[in-house]
Length: 289
Image (cartoon, rainbow, N blue to C red):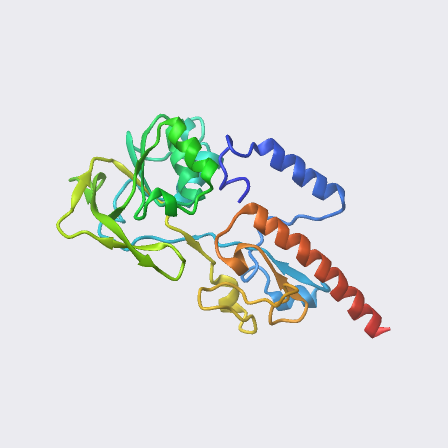
């Protein structure tokens, strides 16, 4: 995710590469192209001799709005847009064989850090960008500095606005975004004031590309094939205070237990879980003596 999800201008790939090289220098073996839950199950990993497992698969399954027009051309999840442009260098087609069909006017729907990353990246490839968010700027979950940076760079903010339909042309490409204005009511379960639609306030934003960045959820693959792995209602893995899951010896941390959060939070969980794993293995070894 550090490579495909965070743009180069925010986290240069060379920094990630140096971190990976350091990890490998410690003796860590990195096995790529391996999908846990398909290539191997957790049970098979234990049978292969691993004494503990740490699940850090994140929450990379993009969510959509469920509105008409989301299947039109030039509608992207933020995940796909960031991967294609940031990692696969779609903006250098045909030098890189990963084209991305993007117009001149881009609407990014959402108010989190991922939405800001997508908006600022679209701006850097020469597009006119508008951020569309259903609450006010005050309620945006993105970091304050990210919001300020986006404003300084020229990204337009269309707040208190809820998209209700993506409009397409005869070629089934985006040509507009129909929205409705909102007002803020009483706080909901998140603690933020709930957005309420204003009657007869519909209007259309002139855009030809839409990027949806309204959140991500855990990929259910691992939990579906691992019946002993207890999950919460939102699909995240349930853990105790030591990051242990319902399977003895299997730990988890990061977005897969919290839902989408920051890289720093995930790194902190990894370090705390590492201490717990170390104690678990030592205690198990002592009990077997």
